[in-house]
Image (cartoon, rainbow, N blue to C red; front, side, top):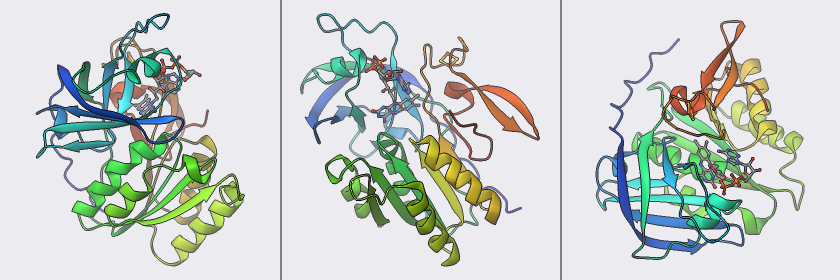
Length: 275
Ligand SMILES: Cc1cc2nc3c(=O)[nH]c(=O)nc-3n(C[C@H](O)[C@H](O)[C@H](O)COP(=O)(O)OP(=O)(O)OC[C@H]3O[C@@H](n4cnc5c(N)ncnc54)[C@H](O)[C@@H]3O)c2cc1C
Ligand code: FES
């Protein structure tokens, strides 16, 4: 069992009012939010998240904060970015933010991704909003000289996000869509088996799809490939106190319960149970 690379010291969390720099549509469902945010926010690690106090707008009065993983955290520019899908009252409120407005956000929170010093090539497989969560992992891998193959899955080409972000980080990017059937789990399995055979899969990382998680778990178990998954779960406090985000996990042959906000949201891939 190779030694784990020393985990980076987690950044302290803070509750701040961050000025909005931009909040633009990237397609008909997703917006890209850029905020001015100094330390500790801009020190967020890949896979960590912020708890956002989404603005109330008319009939939409979101009571709880909404969790959102960091799409990019840039300590030099003092910025934090999110890529989010407009789905309900909270994200509809987020979508109304304009440059100059301010957003209250708490973070960075949670346990993010980590890279083992022995891994030279990793495979990142994501779908939908999961791609936003995985993008900073590719950046972290690039900084550590680890090769990344990113398989980006979406309904159609118009809904594939972050291709340029992954490409800029030097990832080898493969796009699969429902439109041409290339996103079917059996087709993705063929891609993964090819990467394993080529020695390009020292570890698996995934987010955003139960079917893709199960596929990576099965192939990981078959070939002894470790991995990590970022889980999404509705949250209230986001701080480990209310236990509303508890999910079952497999650990040492038994079922245990863990808080996604506190123990995760990133977990060893073999521990996660499907949903
Ligand atoms: C750690 C973490 C990181 C996340 N990162 C991102 C991200 O980078 N980009 C992004 O677009 N979304 C992300 N999400 C999901 C995001 O939190 C939800 O989409 C958001 O809370 C929905 O709020 P809403 O008020 O707009 O919708 P609601 O009206 O609350 O819900 C709309 C629909 O989304 C479902 N939903 C609500 N909250 C969640 C949730 N937390 N997880 C899964 N499904 C949910 C509801 O069941 C409902 O079907 C993340 C979630 C977690 C837990
Ligand atoms: S959201 Fe309260 S414990 Fe996780």
